[in-house]
Amino acid sequence: MRFRGHRIVKTAIAVLLTALICEWIGWPSVFAVITAIVTLEPTVSDSIKKGIVRFPASAIGSFYAVLFMYLFGNSPLTYTLATTLTIISCYKLKLYDGLLVATITAVAMIEVIYDDYLLSFFIRLGTTTIGLSVSTLVNLLIFPPDFMTEIERNLQNAYKHIGHTLFSMSKGNPSSVEKQMGKLNVSISKTEELIRYEISDAKYLKLEETKLHSLEQAEKRLEQLRFIQYHLTNLQPIHLDETNFSSENKQTIYDALEGLANFITGNSKDMPFHHGEKLQAIMDMYWTNAFHHEAAKRTGLPQELVFLYELISIFYLVEHLTMGHEAQFHR
Image 1 (cartoon, rainbow, N blue to C red):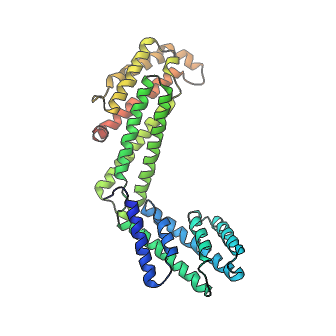
Image 2 (spheres, helix red, strand yellow):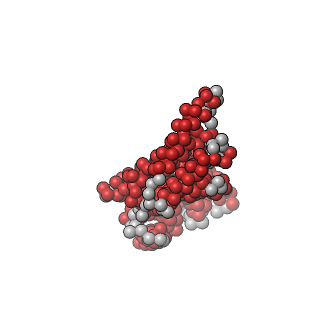
């Protein structure tokens, strides 16, 4: 079960366990606790992957701290050289995810190194190992990452933003269209990220068959939403009032936009198939009569045909999407 603030609870537990283990062994807790905090990633997979990077990075920072403390003592030069060479080494070795921890380690260790430099170095590696291990286990065992509820919510939001975008188009409001498209893009990007999180953790959390099926369905729905996003993006620069459609055809298109928008947002329960059929009839007429010869002379299609094609494609995709997932999108 997940709840608001679960990350705070997991962090507190990781810090407590890490500090208790270090106290029991007799090692300083501060470095282990810092490592535990920064290693508690949104997913178990990221905790493990970044932990593997942060361990050698921390070892590099510890090495430079010990080396320059031995050579120059606790001096400004020691801080400068330890910091600079730690950053350069991490960049050269492409240990980017461990750069911050390594630099903090190098600077903070200078204050706690006394006589036994070699022992200080190995104790630092030990505390790093404790912090990494505890945070990863806590992430795996306590409130394991579960993003399905959030994925579902984002899919619903993306679908509604599509409806609001179409409604804005039906009202001829470009600024509102742009605003809704921005919200749609954010929802889709966030959903892609959450699905990636869920997939990356599947091999560690052994997801139930029901959840795996839900994840697979979410990926399919997201793919359909991406296609609709693509067609909306192509529609966005075309302003219907500036096209050569007849007044009657423009009204038909406006009605189609509004009808589809009402269906997607839940204001209408019935899929407006008849609008799609009317749009197809207009497209057939323009293709075979008005624009056929003109289009042959152009490098690109007239914007009227582009508009009709994109809108009909959206009708088709919404129909396909809701036929398989009507329960999810219309609750």
